[in-house]
Image 1 (tube, protein in one colour):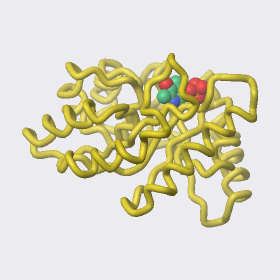
Image 2 (tube, rainbow, N blue to C red):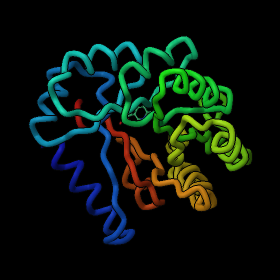
Image 3 (cartoon, rainbow, N blue to C red):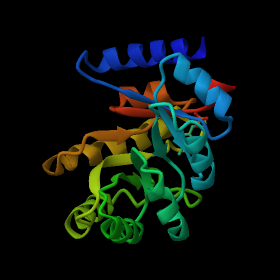
Image 4 (cartoon, rainbow, N blue to C red):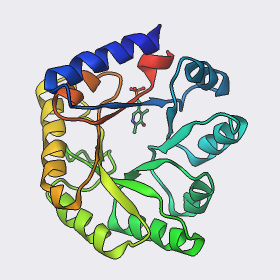
Length: 218
Ligand SMILES: *Cc1c(COP(=O)(O)O)cnc(C)c1O
């Protein structure tokens, strides 16, 4: 089974870091329907990731009876924040600026909820990619921690550099992990990095959460 293979690969990579290094798998279901989610659930998977609020809403509702954890991993437009909070997401990985954080904070405050979020870092400084500049990440993180009382800020997320060059991909993961380590005074717990093509490398660079779609579903 694909899930078993992915879990075995994660296991091998994490043990090469340390027996104490724990890695969580988020199954990215953005390109499949509810029956594929249900089938993975029946094999034991609980955490699923979506990159569009609308798709997350429909799957979330269709599978309401199952004890699933929904992770939001896509670009968040401010007019979708309320709809996202309605779904009570387990973790929002893709907060990519202080403005977005403040917008979520403000709406969360009105509802009396405290969503868990990560700061997305554009580790390879790619123009096509969302996320804060790695040189500003620690400052933005501190500013969110200070000015957004309704957010549970719990770490960082990155998408590995978009290139065949493993060295550059590795560098983008190392950059992100180094920022995560510098944030130790804030006690972050999640360093979300690694997708189907690069999760082994991401874990070896210190990822604690991988987001895998195609390797599980295609
Ligand atoms: C689609 C997506 C993934 C999963 O990508 P795969 O290559 O299919 O594993 C992970 N993270 C984000 C942010 C995504 O949009």
